[in-house]
Amino acid sequence: MKLQLFTSLLLSVSLLTLPLAVEANQADSLRQMIQSRRQQKATESFWEEFHDAKYYSPKYIFPQHGSMDGDRVGALPGQPNGVDFNQYAGYVTVDPTAGRALFYYFVESPENSSTNPLVLWLNGGPGCSSLGYGAMEELGPFRVSADGKTLFKNPYAWNKVANVIFLESPAGVGFSYSNTSSDYTTGDTRTANDNYAFLVNWLERFPQYKLRDFFITGESYAGHYVPQLAMTILANNQNTNQTVINLKGVAIGNAYIDAGPKYLEGIYDYYWTHALISDETHNAIVKHCDFVNWTYSRICGDYLDIAKADAADIDHNNIYAPRCHDPAENKGVPSSIDNFDPCSDNYVHSYLNTPEVQTAFHARPTSWESCNQVVFDNWTDNPITVLPVIKTLMTSSIRVWLYSGDTDAVVPVTTSRYAIDTYKLPIKTPWHQWYTNLEVGGYVEEYEGLTFATVRGAGHPVPSYQPERALVMFSSFLQGSFPPPPKA
Image 1 (cartoon, rainbow, N blue to C red):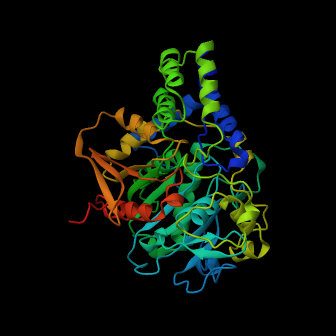
Image 2: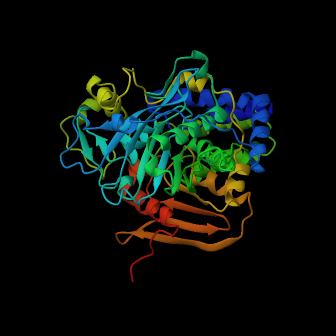
Image 3: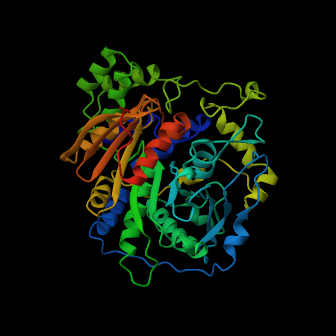
């Protein structure tokens, strides 16, 4: 009965960063992972080994001579004039026996690229594209116009302050692939190991970045990817025969880090406090649904169904944003960075499936999709929580930030606050406002070992809806300072 309730709850909410067209499948995928209780316990035991920082798995470094020059992107089709930074794209092999290779897109800073830090961006899913979402709809240097053929500049791109890698991971996502079909049965552990193998080989390809300060960022299910990769790096840095990666910090947006009872409570508390469900429904859920013990009753199920119906027909990525109805209506309408187009998924899909674009990216001819359903359906390990991993990172001297767009109902700000509360951390700097252009950009609080920030008016993919505020927050994270206070 406990699992039955958990499945029902997961089916009633939208959890991961997927396009609306496949929204039903994302809950199905997560439900399948949650049901695999035995595998989850085994995976949690595996990650416990990392807590002692005694586990490492050296990765083979492949010859990379000349690969950087070969990956140089001269220009992307339809890109605007005046591009003043270097772009690279291509594949890095992570397993030559299986023929498994991960695709990346790398953009250097227009200024100070030789001194700015190196940042890796990971989108979630599991199984969604960091190229399609992160690079083309969020923090990359370009957005795709409604014609699906041309690009326009993002003045708030994160490569303004960092050199940024967008990695499509694991194999099967976007342009990444394997020649071994069984590789598409994967999970958290292989993804962490493959991402690490990618990094040590990528640094051989771009040796000028070997000693650079390195940060890992991402959102949604990257709440698993980011801390697990960080732990893998710290463990492998102890191996004297392996490349030492100069990891300085991690930052995760609207992070799916804990699927315990507080997560479920946070979903329905968010629905209620944001007027998506009634007082009666919320009170009944609190009374009849035992989140702690996951016990199920008919009346609990009835009210969960009511909540599901009441919160339907809105975009859970941003509860105040319009949904995409007819992408064709937007053709010819000038694109704007200040108003995120809800049909952007469609434009990106068209652009990345253009043969000339795939050639420019040095990608194999591919029927590119933003999220891979096969990866969803065959995800084999998914720990219920990564809170212990994050706690270990908090004691390892690296910078740890969690941030939340406050209009997201996929992984709401309440779930992040409840998860942080389980640590019972001392507060170093109390909750306070931060500002951009004389407006409140969000709120921030510093705990012992962790900083939590919100971005006001941002949805699940924070940089999509509030690109300027996101850049201000990200810059502060890199600098190890709070986002700016109001000007005197």
